[in-house]
Image 1: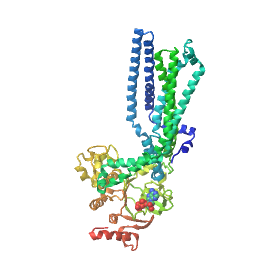
Image 2 (image 1 turned 30 degrees about the vertical axis):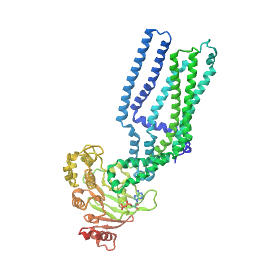
Image 3 (image 1 turned 90 degrees about the horizontal axis):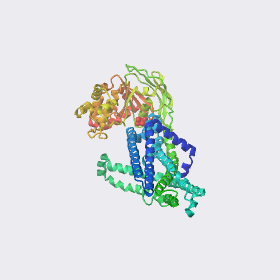
Image 4 (image 1 turned 135 degrees about the vertical axis):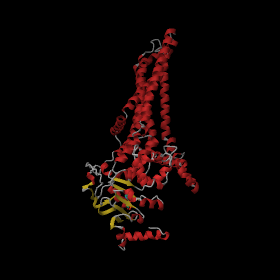
Length: 632
Ligand code: ADP
């Protein structure tokens, strides 16, 4: 949990470095946007001063000599200057908006995190610490807008405050310079430099204390971080629950609305007895009230000083509005700058967490060898005494695996849940490196190959895959443009073509409703066939199917297996299946038990080994299926 002490632990030097790093990240990505933003902030800051300055001139003329030509001239200048600045501001605003909306800057932080997640070692991407860190970073970005994405907002606010401050100084210099008339009696005291010093001191005092009070308030919010995050999670969950069509049926049938009672969790984290409410009544509320009172008090002092100087004849009545406006804006600008320093200090904590995620190093050996492109798909893979433990675990998920794949062979991996089949595939695809032993492709340790090229040798259909809300053809090709004939061929072989033919736009039919009203929903079994078609489209030497038929009904499963030869073609295929009958057609079956390879051979040979794991599994499955006259 974050507390005030945690924030203090980061030195100001580090806070500055973190903010600078985040700024450079942004700037490198969007230099034009930063230029547009800077110009917009300048125009935005200048505009009120133009009105202030020229209307003061106008008022002075009205209260003074009242020369008609001069009055008209001043009105024209005021209107023209305002029109030019407004027009320019509108043009620059469009430019800035086009740049920011067109480049989706609001997704910038998310995109960086996503890219990092894809490029880091898989073991890190999968680890619960990484996932927890990422969730934390995303939550603070979503709910509090802290993190890398805040830096752009801070940049805008910083420039606006700076320009306000500079403009304020420029327009109020003469306030201190112009003396009260000598015949103004006791008001002459206002000409004393000490008086000016006192006012500047007051200005600095208020400007310093106000943002400090603001930061006190923000720190209180940070101390409620855990409660607020939990409350937001519940809020998010219930908001989703109430809007998701897919859940509506379950909610109705099982009366799940009863769980809505837990909405009280939100109340206890945000309601009148919550920690944040207690802070609001105490420290945070007092800080906020004191900050507002101070700024009003300061405003009062300025009014008094300016009016008395005007009373003493230092300047005309019109200048009163100019000076009051300028000093107030100057003080506001300075306060905002200091508040931003405090805000950047708080943001530094979140930046540190975000960079911790973005800086997770890639520890896996990054090879550079190119994988020889072979049209005959003649690749040989060998596991040489491979053992593997997942990071931060003591138990081996795989033990002493030695195995050679013969090219074009169909290999099945069978075994009970948790016996190590999927882990074997993960090692084969180099999602993890073996803890001991090595895996070789054409005699060379796979770690020496360029990772992407090595991955290109495999097509995998995992159990939990995800299709996208793009067209059927694009999903098959995993690309926006694709070879239609090839996609159709893969669809036919995977048994999905008949379904495509029923769709109005054929291969161009969009899946799901996320991005298109006309999107088509498909069943789990159909998705599985589509995933198989996608794996086939990628012309790789190995086809790995991890429980490819889990979501299929027995008929569809039978259909897939009878097409297996067509699907696999000349590839080397590796299957994982719970249904042993599906594996009967394979050339070689490897039986895993508690992380070890306990048997290896074809179906007949393994079944003949009485007391072996394979016959045990076969007989266990037979109990359930033979009664129906089906195969295990
Ligand atoms: P199978 O595919 O045969 O069901 P797995 O290869 O998924 O088995 O799992 C083998 C063993 O490794 C199991 O004991 C499982 O709990 C463990 N395991 C799997 N994935 C992880 C992981 N990400 N972290 C830690 N242990 C894991």
